[in-house]
Length: 335
Image 1 (tube, rainbow, N blue to C red):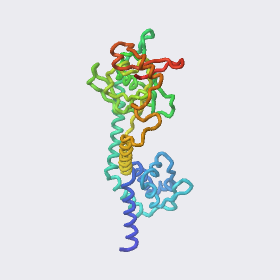
Image 2: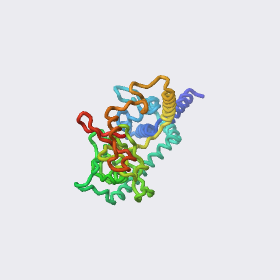
Image 3: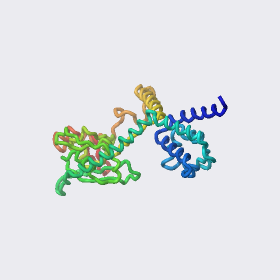
Image 4: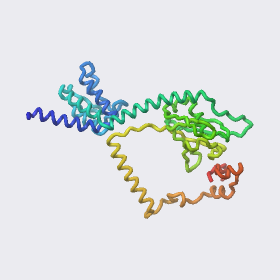
């Protein structure tokens, strides 16, 4: 074969080898760059690349992304990637063919299917929330009636002050809280998805959002609340007389080929660490790592000794928050 053929064959193999390593977002971004280089009217905007922008950051973060640009002819200068001349038609053709191969791989197709499912889930969520908002939420108790103050902190915000607050009745259920949150127009909850109308509730159908992770963070240890708790009263869940919940929206995660390997290695390391901890050959940290070894605080000892059922048998069985005075301060503890 001629030297030119050997060189082009090596270039083809390099492009193809890198294309299957690219993440789906990086492959799409590089495809747009190659198409800009192929069109005379758009070549100018592809001469200098800022890989810190939102649309191109994925290239530097993806395995093989920077190397693909270097084979195209880009060089790193002053934090930017620049190209001196437009690649030859043969190089652009080989890059296009390699990117087409990368777009036919299973990880890429799965990622695109995931994007489509996210879009469908979001459209369904909007429709579900419109139906949900057409139904009245649980009534706010009157001032002369015992109320439960509930504060929901939105974990997906950059500011810790973002929260929603309302007074509920102790007899209201957790599904009433979900309904109230679903009916709220908080901007931080716009990314919510996967709402489902459950029909197996003891009090009738109720809404549940599978993309929300709701956690009781009033006291330690924190407790995750799930769909199994939907029909339990707020008092039975130990949220009386007030509580703080943390709401975090679960996001869809796409996994690239390199993330599969990374996840496997992390799970292996976690299993080794867990086995070493379970053997306890090296002992625990000062203060104890296990709940069984932890010594009770003085306030907890007082709480255990003085705790009594304030609301009858139900309160005793569900173990609501206890209140004790420590150094003049009202402290709430779980039994």
